[in-house]
Amino acid sequence: MPNAPAPKTYTSPQRKLLRFFEKSRNQWKTKCRDAKSKVKRLSERVRFLEESRDRWKKPDSNGFCGHSR
Image 1 (cartoon, rainbow, N blue to C red):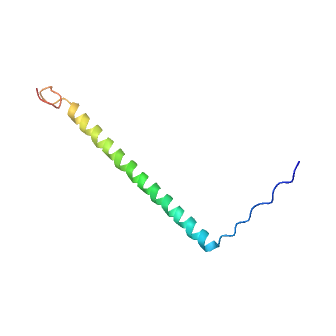
Image 2 (image 1 turned 90 degrees about the vertical axis):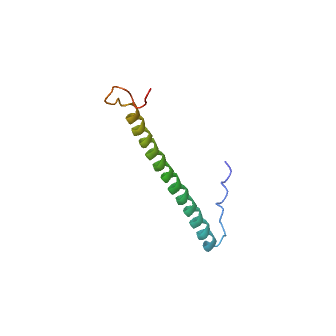
Image 3 (image 1 turned 120 degrees about the vertical axis):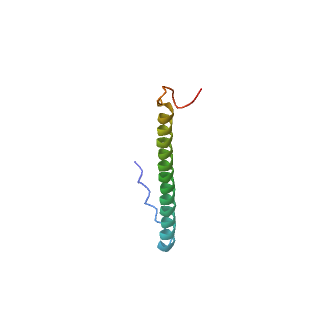
């Protein structure tokens, strides 16, 4: 069995790596925050629409549902 190649060493300066990984992390956090706020907005909208639909379908004192004929 042939010998495994030696692990590759990276020669990038740590300051460049630090900036790269920090920028990558910040972009990931922003993306996650945006997605989380969108999910919250959409779930609030669903709740509002369900409540509106339930009010619409609920019979009034005359026995009619939320719309008039």
